[in-house]
Image (cartoon, rainbow, N blue to C red; front, side, top):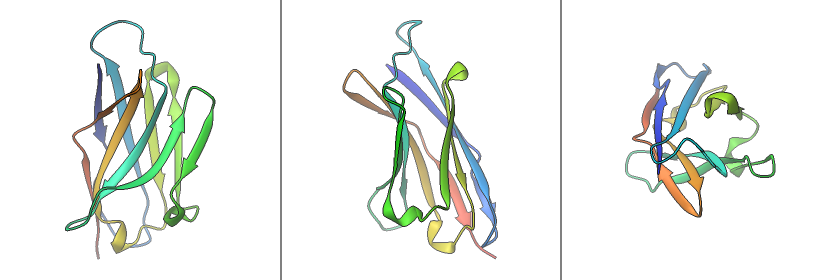
Amino acid sequence: QVHLVESGGGLVQPGGSLRLSCAASDRTSNSYGIDSMGWFRQAPGKEREFVGIDRWIDNTTFYADFVEGRFTMSRDRSKNMLFLHINSLKPEDTAVYYCFGDQNAMRYWGQGTQVTVSS
């Protein structure tokens, strides 16, 4: 079972930047065996939507169309961490951002981190 903890959210002005972090740990063994990690977000009153996925198993990365180059994921595999760099933040980026990790066809979720974009 993979345990995920996000951090880095907060209040930022429009046009600003943030880096969200997600740390993964495997509570069942010393072998992490994570196939992929990524991000979803959920804005107030809206459904959770896909942001991006970083497939560790084949080193491919996919983003949602709305990203428009403003979001970039990076990883530190030695620490089992995934980062989400967000530039040119807009008020509509306000949401709870959730990290996920896939292992053995199971998807695990973090508790989420709030990002609020407002002046």
